[in-house]
Image (tube, rainbow, N blue to C red):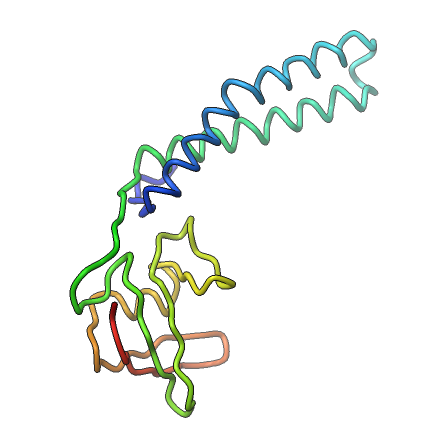
Length: 155
């Protein structure tokens, strides 16, 4: 697993910690019960309940490992202050050739959500904006070509 820093808000860190605790204390027990029940049904080679329980177990253990790694490498972010774009900043940009402005919050990859205008610091736009300030022009590569925009404001 990656040792890369995982930037999280305090709220997201708490949410992931709660999910991890639930998976370890509740979900594992549920799956163990499913496995015991399925074993009691007889021949395991053609036992759909057993195979489903094993699949659930594998998915749960994979999620636990991912959450443990994220929490271990977590860097708690706060609302970014100052005129330089960083994780936690809210940035207003204007793309070249467009009349309207767009507003995005820069977050860690686990919190990105385009419906809420939260973009990852690892996304092409997020990477281009990091370390920049109001008035700077940035360009980034997309599948449809290079896009250039101007930073209107950094909050």
